[in-house]
Image (cartoon, rainbow, N blue to C red; front, side, top):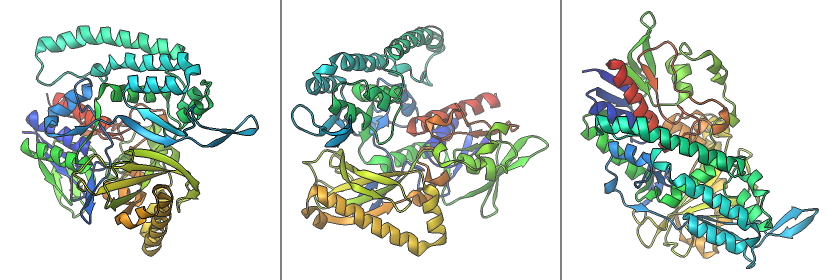
Length: 518
């Protein structure tokens, strides 16, 4: 039986491990931390459980190829999912400088609140009501989203492991060529009509309604590609992207249980020092842990941080020449990290939207990142985290200055804790200004995570939340030059990252190893 050492018990590592176990390999996952999941994690403080990662799971229901992939490794019927009516509710700036003067930003009803509905019919009806002058563009936009719905079952193309030979021939030889031709036509049609091109900001400029123009720019915290927005809308419309009750921690434990039941082993608190290579044979011999222990392997899979894998574990010897420039990675090349303020409040918060943004007086993180609004996620729909009469809240602050927090914690622990306390107090004051003075007395627990937290627990470069930015301009970082038995998977393998990439990359690497072994 061939042995595979997998570095990292995140989603990619466990997905890869389950597939390999099913294919007759012996696998051991070495995890530096004490829990499974990697970034897909959660923790508890004072009777409150905090969700550290997942807002929704792509593939929660049939209609997406990711549903097929998840069901290969975990029983989704064990999970209760929540399908929200609205994705987010947010304030549009009350005044925006236009044509040299301040303009009121309200809809025709005098409201400055914008509702981003999940179902396309609901969203279209709402948009047509508040901006009838933009009816043509709105209908074309929603038509594009509805058209994408038809292709989610084959994006990416996946056929279940237990499919017959004839089913596989039919899928790859007939179904996929036809569907890809249809998708190509749909893409070109809506690219030439101006929907599937540009960004949310450039698209927003095409609306006549000042309110809608400003709202579309603020659908996301950052400017996003329109094709990404339309795909996310399609997922939501189909109901294939839902929140799993219990959040990230419960989901990670479910994956770990599935892996262990398949016969795999997870060794926690086992930090890997390096991948041991026989340079003459151009093959890895196994892995060496921080404590000096050596584990022999026929194959090694790193589901860990890309920079650590290539420059530390492999000592720069097997990196593609065009990637050497990433020995020092620019902050703008990696996905932002977060400071997240978690609160436990003795109030179910049932009368508030589950996800909202509102404007405040300008403020900044200690690392210099500036903000003029708060992004608040209220878990008033998941009683498993706190009970019916209490609630957990997460307030998000994106930052690409993860190195500031990591250095601060390493070199000035007292100062690090001090700035965390001060920023927590500042953020709570802004929440009190929005929710009312009584909100202050309801807070029972607070916990501020920083990029240093993510770096410490996952070793992700600068505490990145999803690996490379999609704008990095390279399709894949999953190659190891010159080693036939070392493979990479995880959200660093393909720019954009996230759980879907972690799942698929783990699955793909398992297939490569299976084919390599003959």
